[in-house]
Structures are given as C-alpha cells and as structure tokens.
Length: 164
Image 1: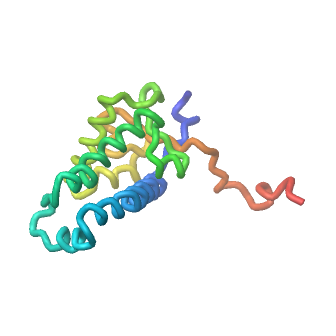
Image 2: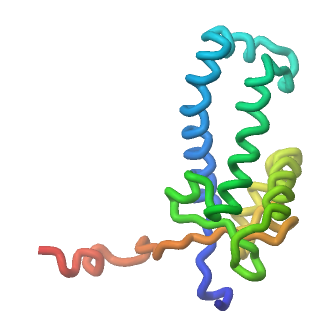
C-alpha cells in the first residue's frame, strides 16, 4: 500500500479517542475505588502534596498499572483501545501495517511518558507531522490509521443521492 493510499488519524481524532478512553476507564474504576476506599478517596487524593501518592494496593493497581496493561493489551490484540475503535482508528507498525508486538506496545507506552514529559510536545507533534506520528510513534515505528472512509469532503447532494 502506498503512502498516498493510507489515511492517517489526525490530532483531533486521536485526542478524542484518548478522551473517550479516559472517560470509559474512569467510569469503570470510580465505583470500584469508592467501594474499596469510600467517598473520601477523592478528597484524600486531591489533598496530597505528591502526585505520586498511593492510597493502597488497589489504588496503585487500578490507577497506574491496570490502565497501562489494558492499553498495551488492546493495541496488541485489537490494534485499538475502545476510544480508538469507536473513532475508527487502528495502531499498527509503520513499516508493515501489521499489529504491534508486545515489545512495540511496551516501548510505545514508555514513549507516551517521554512525549508527556516534554511539555506534551510529543503529542502535539501529531498535528504537524506528515504521517500524523507523535514522538512515541516515531520512537517505536508505529502509525495510527483512520480505517473508515471520510465523507467530510463530499457535497451534501452527493451524500443524499439514493435517499427517497
């Protein structure tokens, strides 16, 4: 497949997918954290001086380790997290367009940290790159594809053809 035939997922689509993933994961973990630690859990978290403070083992697992494992699993198994899937995106190896390996998924997660530590410029890079790659994509050789056809450039008349 030539580079011209590939449709890359852009910055806003990927940001939307990230927001959906965060919303879905928060909806899943919030009731569990409240059941385990009570409603004061969120007050406790907000009052801590250190952003790395941990309330307990379940807190550490649910807010730090499980999301990373879930993201890597989704990339390797399905090529997309739920948010990326809902927005028709797929994370693939940039050279082969095949699913990521576990090694690539792990390194891509580390690349997320690097992208964030650089004032999030590693993510902003997506908006300006020809292949819509962030720093984390460049580091491991991945791209995010937009899999469905985009009808945004079509006229309303064209889209309405065939309707009653």
